[in-house]
Length: 462
Image (cartoon, rainbow, N blue to C red; front, side, top):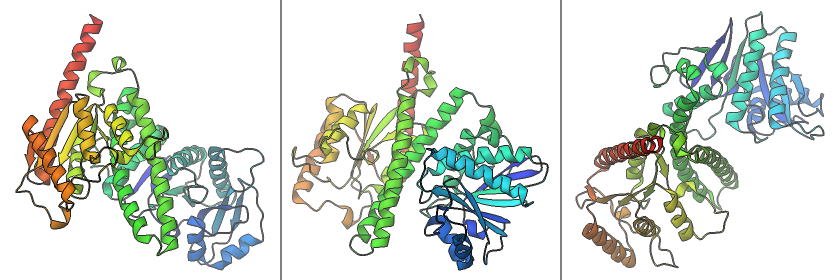
């Protein structure tokens, strides 16, 4: 099915699936809860809602429980025979790490399954809800433990890990990207994948290939995935912020959920960005020329160029280049002003790509320039390689997209006139036109960089 992948261990199977655990037909459903099994949030609340109060009443007889314990109760109205409650929130006198808690809970569930002579079990991502553990880390840790336990079994078992799409926005490409990353981090599990006609034809890299890839091949693939993930998270952040703005002062529950989702989004972006920077900080001389990453700072206003900006990201991804933009850099720890932060980020990029539309953008009070023009001026001053694109007068725009401020209109006209007098920008007419042109320009730029690096490496060797 869409959004799932199955791995075979002898006669037993492990399935990783995006979906609702309460819809599972497994004999055991696992829930993650606090030491009093309050069942007040996340998966535990969903199980309580679907199975009825009988589950909570049965659990109340067996509390308090210790961190890491597994408490078995009735499944109420659910078709399952038992609910295994994994205790992930509570006092921690022995100093268990998050990974210890997940590993212990998963292993105990599998062992209890054997004691009760049951053959199927459905897990959530243990601790990834209210407890706040990382979804990706939990899924990887659980898969490794379950695969170990399945290999020991002489009976046929069926285990499923349900990873819930919290924001309800995942599409086919997102599922594929998750499973590619999952395979890269769990090669022992991935080499046991069961081919699925619904998803195996789409990825360019098979799980069998991933199990045999070299360290350098993994880095190259991981860099590509990180760029795509960061671009997707940026788009998600914009949507979440719009939802938060709509909920402010109107709906406290929606506002709280939006704030938490934004926090999750920021944590993921920082995690992926940190990993990406660690790769990019490696000594260029130790890399092969065709794995040299180039970072491209994409500068534009947002409201009038949403689709154009997305098209440029696609061009960057096709060329395996890293997108840089202000969306990826939240509050600055060094206390820089927004203008100072912009200057700093443009300096870090290898290439500047500027898109000039029909808006000038918000003006920085200290300089009198928009953030977009500040980005352009910094790239020009530092003599960065620049790719410039200006919207054609015949391009389709709506009235709502056009700059309304007289000051902004005048400054935008002056900026366009300056660029047209000094450079030869490409005049794009629509989204497809810009995507095709940026792809050709970026590919050419990367090829030149590769040749230059090869020449430099050759001279060094000589």
